[in-house]
Amino acid sequence: MTGSHVAINRDYWNGMAADWVAAGERNWRREAPVWGIWGLPEAELGLLAEGLDGKAAIELGCGTGYVSGWMTRRGARVTGVDVSSEQLATARRLARDHGADIAFLEANAEATGLPAGSYDFAISEYGAAIWCDPDLWLREAWRLLRPGGGLVFLGNHPLALMTAPNSGAPSEAILHRPYRGLGRLDWTGVEIDPGGVEFTRTTAGWIAVFSEIGFDIEGYLELYAPDTAEGTRFSVPADWAKRYPCEQVWKLRKRA
Ligand SMILES: C[S@@+](CC[C@H](N)C(=O)[O-])C[C@H]1O[C@@H](n2cnc3c(N)ncnc32)[C@H](O)[C@@H]1O
Image (tube, rainbow, N blue to C red):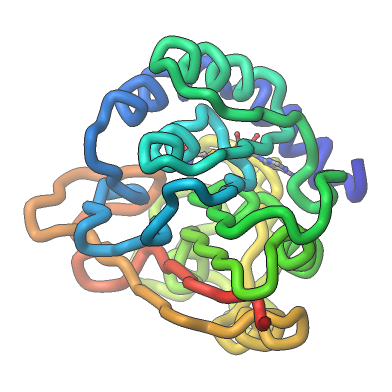
């Protein structure tokens, strides 16, 4: 393991895995993919690459593996990478239950050890996208992709992180931390619902790291809660997320 955040996050996820089984089961059963906190439809967001049939795809930080399952159903040969043996145990069981042939690998998505240039498409929904150091996992994703291969990832919008109180309470319409320098977020010691160590960048910071590594930007989405959303999910109140974007999606392509 490189870097203490990897061990902290692995232990956190091994401890949390039982709480994610039901959501994993629900998502594996879905015919049509939905994304993020509010379950926004694939038909609106278009996160999965078109023409996955016969292609090699990898999910970085696959958790219970439902995104891998959705790609398998579209005909892709899929590898799911996760650092948590407990999350992978759920993923393997659900893949078996659904008759999906997926190569699951227990590894750090920042350094998988998989062969370079062997994937057409890589994806992460709240996996490597938030739990890994962007300088490391984006470089690893770039290495794993063939020239011209696509990378799509979804994670928290910087606004949701800037407006999250230090206590771990839900986001508010108040700035609680500086935008300048937004990067590593350690939630291990917060009062409410302690978590792991997460990573982000400012928007300019993301664009700089993509360009430095060798990704072109094909799309960028800011996601809001739908008008019908209610309550608070994962520390994001629906009323807040109807006014401010709580999540973002980057669609990238490895420069050929
Ligand atoms: C929230 S799950 C993501 C899966 C799914 N899309 C979801 O939203 O439930 C986050 C996953 O990232 C994994 N993860 C955290 N750090 C990782 C790392 N360094 N390498 C690979 N996986 C990692 C965790 O073990 C966990 O299973």
